[in-house]
Image 1 (cartoon, one colour):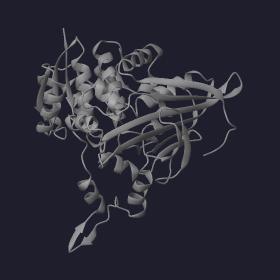
Image 2 (image 1 turned 90 degrees about the vertical axis):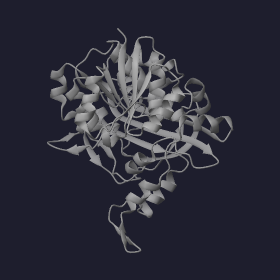
Image 3 (image 1 turned 135 degrees about the horizontal axis):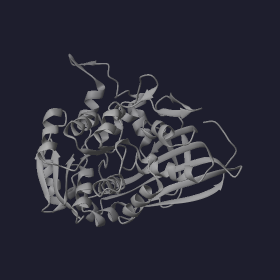
Image 4 (image 1 turned 45 degrees about the horizontal axis):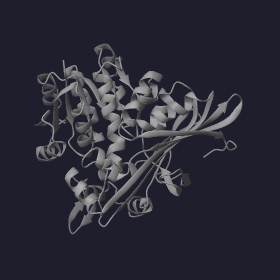
Length: 412
């Protein structure tokens, strides 16, 4: 019997995941659900599959979302909604008795040690017999897989250092990722894992000039950034890790630093603007431009106005046979034009983020990930990781690696 799937979120990620799933012969009905049905219809037209239906879903209405999941008798819920809506969508899937997948974690917080919201119902998920695969995109997701791949080549792990870099050129400002999420992350003190425990550090700290391999290539600036991997990887890798961090960069990273750190445009304290009290954060998040539709991405690419390439790297340093060794891993994936050729209207970023999610989804639907409970990519076994790597390679995404003598041990 063919499987059915609702995709919560009809933006750039929904376009890619919907396309990949619609090409699988064993997938039947796909419901593209979004609070903005016009955007969902637009994305469905871009995908152009008769397997797709469109529905309205407000994931903040948990009971209604759970009812939608039950009525559709779906086999897996793929949640691509922004991070702030993850707890509601995940709760709805648990209530509905459906398998679940998302792309990130939210709200790392301290309760009897470090935890994150998706683990609040870990026991309930385990007893349900259903799987909840979280952090299953590019970063996090592929980054976690790279960390595990590197760790498996070493006897002991000292450091895991992740970098995320994008190069985008356009004659106007066109964001290829949800800027509100990025702005919130920029204004959030990052976690690092240091000496076996988590620690907060200041925003835009840890400045580093990192030498990226081709096709990005060259020495480029990155900063520590609020992200999941610094905490989840040490907790779920299966080997002790002394230090772990995540850094991000792009050619405009210092402009974001100026806006957030110097101008304080993400502050939550209201200021008087002509007699009206306004939070700078609310204003900035309101005026940030949205990601372009798939049709607009295609048009701008064809006109030669938009080009982009991104890369994820993961350096795992430790010992192998008593020798200090560094395993360098990085993604080699299509640029924006190549991504559009594989999935109409995809960007390099949405392809690298969403193809892994789609492959993970297919693995769950095909019974190739026979687990129950909350699962993270870094905990997957060799056979499961091989299936993922084979699946993403069909869309031009490869993980390169090189082992080399490690530099002398140093603290950040």
